[in-house]
Length: 340
Image 1: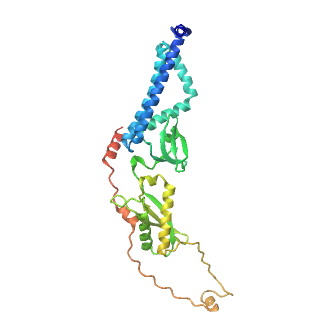
Image 2: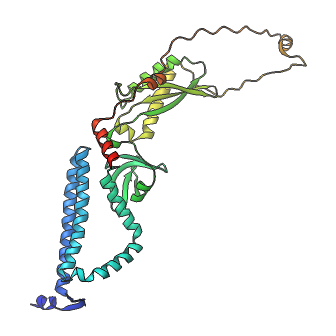
Image 3: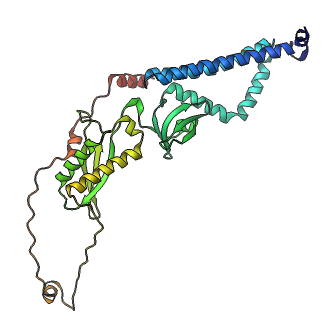
């Protein structure tokens, strides 16, 4: 009886509507109920998504989770206002003015919220993708929240990146569509080393690394001679690692570099060291042959270099190989994007 009496106590009037204690309590209960339902449904969908294999199913569940979570909260707030007995149409002008004020004061938060929705529906990034920002920040996407995207780097440090930064700035998605990528591992050997020997031992070492993918028609492990350095030949190992290895680039490059060094040492290939040639132009006023004679030295005739044997040039073969055709689903998506 006491609660019934209190519930009819009028608090204030808003236009033609009277707000009572009972109406406020009912509205709060309704909002709490919808928020609890949003949390329960979101948690259930999150557990279901975590059991799914990475792919379209997991992405669809993530979108459903976010839409239902946000939608139930907004619907609960509207239902709570309606349960107060307030005619929403009568306060439309007031709500519009209040919305403009809130929008100006919270434009940063609203911007991040809209950017988060764009990321979710555009699916440029998905949960589990390995991304790199323009400032070098890299990590695995853990969650796309209403304000920021949570990214975990390989040191198990969680980074919060504002959603708008992922849209406005250049971002590299290293694992888009669950595909691996080709990496380049540079190394050097001394000038004069046997190029074919270098190629064979480095290829064998790379293929022995457990996360190297086997060769096929579309990808091959290769060794390229890319240029000359100071007393060195500059090479690159071209290799296709597994998707999980791509998500750990520093460890992956370190593992390949270690394997290359072991292979070169075992094969007796010389590692380059800094060298300087010193030329004596004059000796006690004598130059050229006269200087050598004064030192009791004789010029040795240069041996005629042997004709080079035929070696495999992986870089040339790669340039002559046609690019693989994109998968049918990618072509269909590109056609849809072009029409749009």
